[in-house]
Amino acid sequence: MKLALNTILLLLVFSLNAQTIDKKRKIIDLSISFAGFGGDYITNSSGIQAEGEIEINSSIGVQCGVRYIYDISKYNSGGYFIVNVDDLKGFLVDIEIKKYNSSLKNNIQGGYFGGRTAYLFTYSTRDNYQIRRYKAGVYGIIGWKYVAVSGFLFEVSAGLGLQIIDSHSNKNNDVDYYIPVEFPWPKPYDEGTGFYPDFTCDVKLGWRL
Image 1 (cartoon, rainbow, N blue to C red):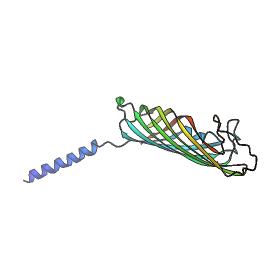
Image 2: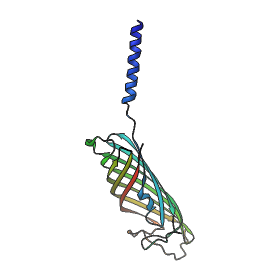
Image 3: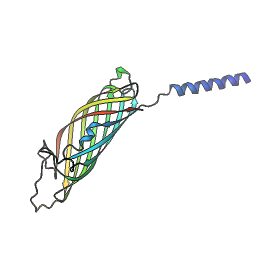
Image 4: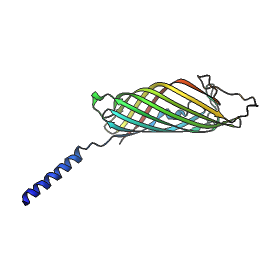
């Protein structure tokens, strides 16, 4: 009887140990987006964007990113295609769902295609009035990710989509202000709403945990 109980206990220990070994740890990739350094790409701004991607299974990953956008007018006065504003602050949040080439069986790396959604908000001033600008977009994307044995990762992606841009300001309509447009679209930066095509591209460097 004692021998039988010991045998059962040993089998349970080996079984639990095997389950622990076989249980696959979920992959998490952390990275910095080079696209984030462009700010909102319309004003004299810059930013920093961090990304995190989690493995759903060996061929599907979900990535979330957050970008903080800030004013750089004291270092850069803009240019012909840039809207000059002051005291700009804002953020961007994006989510990507990626389908990797499952035939490679290499755990969310290699070539992929998928979808992306992004939401951006900025607050700034021009000529002593304030502007709130909102942008939301949906995109189809393709890309490629390389992960070294050390954990270092490199990723490049591009995509096309549709965006809606909405702007509001508290300027005095009785005053004749100069209102720049959002190149290459005719929409005034300070006001109005419009739907426009959009292009997205990115390069990311990071680490696999």
